[in-house]
Image 1 (cartoon, rainbow, N blue to C red):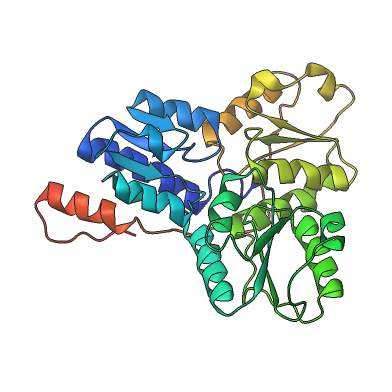
Image 2: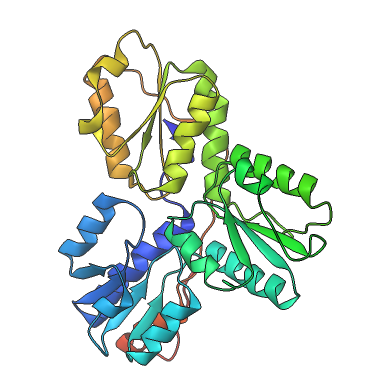
Length: 317
């Protein structure tokens, strides 16, 4: 088993926000889109009273709604105000950072190139910050046909859950095409995405098979599979042990198990137990690097907890 794996700080924060909201305000609590991209987590929260909707328009007027960890566009925020919704924002702080960068570059007169996957919730939200000057590119081929008003005033940003290799190649192509292009002061790919990819990269050559626990709509989970396959090691994305094809294990001596940033540890344990029962009795945890990032809760939740407890303030770490 690889470490770090599974929940990142942004996912822990988002799930905690939904749970605390349910405990503090009671059900129902509406959530726009999946709070994180994992079906097990979503189903668990739904059983506690969370109601997941696709759009803000699906939330009754005046009700409480939580934005998912992937963020939303300003247009969604405006629609929420128009519906008098009580908003709790669970956007990952690292995604919020990218939103701020988009606004900053747009105000400075740059054309924005947003590197990422068009159908991902995070890209939709970030694109909405400056839609008039932003174009999305998903691969090097799209960079080659890209057109901007002023090639000397171009900036790039990236989705937080991209493959490091994928982002590197696209950024290189952009720099070749636009030598004066500028980017964020620090990379947008989040620490957890990078750490999990580095962990896979460190062990894939010693494994006959890499199993990544995560849902199919989880971008960072899919990238882990790509990292493994790009290194020549067979890799599969699985929701749980039931998705394992016994044929995958034939002739394999070592299986590396990891999990995307939105996959709970209980599913990893389920996979490991399956492997134990199928001949892989020696389980070793390989820690590639320590990970101790934590994010505070949003003020809406902190204030609600404070009011519920009768105190004026509350400290949250």
